[in-house]
Image 1: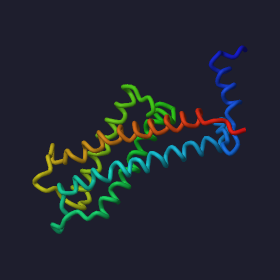
Image 2: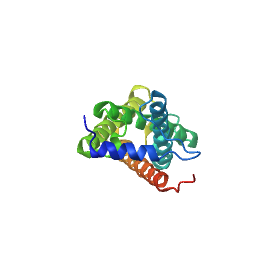
Image 3: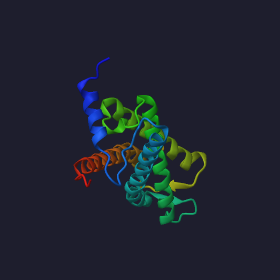
Length: 186
């Protein structure tokens, strides 16, 4: 069976990539696949936490603790960490649906539909649980509501995950371009 031009080019590129101090990742081996997935999950988590924290701080004024006190900063940090885990959940759902670990890099209409539908379900569920099922805090009168659920945290889960995915995609592309354009030091 003859190789296509694409596989010939890919094979030639892979053969020429190894450089001193910079091992080529062979995605055919289980160890390198695990390392790639672990790196992707770590980057998604860190970027998500960093993007969600300012949103959590800003929307904290729309909530009060059950005793009437303000939402403390440490709780915003904890919420940002949970948001990071929720973005990983969205990533995993998309990876399962599309059977591609890089599905978010070129999501298309279906990918964005997964992000938005997942964000809506997650945002609504988390709000309902933290306000009604196992109350942790309550809304102030300034929180816009729809059917008793705060709209700002739902908007957060609709807007920020796609933004996180875009930032990570841009970062990955920039890193890949820097790696492939780095001079060969052999």
